[in-house]
Image 1 (cartoon, rainbow, N blue to C red):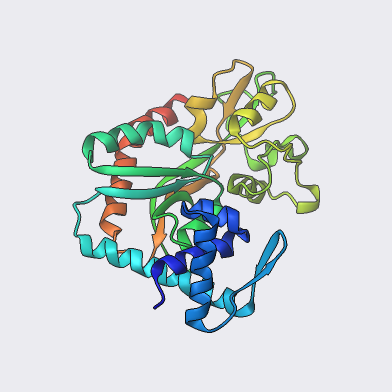
Image 2 (cartoon, rainbow, N blue to C red):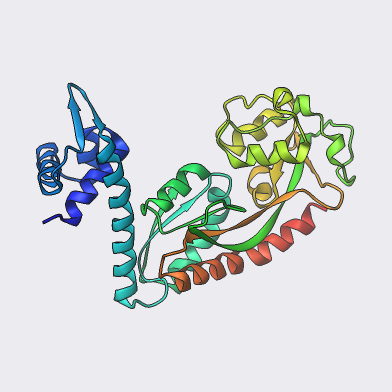
Length: 305
């Protein structure tokens, strides 16, 4: 009889393409994982894995079985969540968040979550949008916080707040801190952005209208802190999300400028699988986020006008 364990081992092998890494991911020994995969092959009556020295590949049948197995595992987890009838925001919640939100939101939200929902066991994963959505779709995460909109018919979203973009420039820049600027005032040749893969980079390019062939170099920066240091040292300018202003503006060599209306920005929200039965959990989480950020966000907007 086919077991969920065998399906879990096969999907892990499909992700890692390596018996050792898959075994580590599943917290079992490599021989145990290999034995269960072979047993699955016997039950199905087809070869699923092509074993080669130092490498493996899934057969066409193996790829199809792994894809179907992933959906079965997700549906099984959703079934368990539904059957438990737990209190709102209790038990385990695997939560993903993009790097341009995590350091600015989590310090405000986590204490409130702990105080209001002490039975919640939150596991946080911080990485880029594509990986978050892949892991959400694959069942490794329950919900993610990121910039909307999100593509995919299998994903449901909940908008939480709008995050305006500010223009961070060296303090010696010609514009007054009280002056509002337009997108046309941004010198694309001096625009410093995060490395490829960060949605904030794509949003900045979209707002500034930079053709891809003339797009600014990313400099390999993986954090806004690094980008802000580049601005402070006169290497260029950048778009800074409003949510990050208080944490990142601690250098007198940098000033922030607001854009004229309509201000560029991003919509931030939660996303989860449409099949998940935990909508009430995610709505409660969204409420905690907006409550934790509300007063601070309003004060911050005023302080930078």
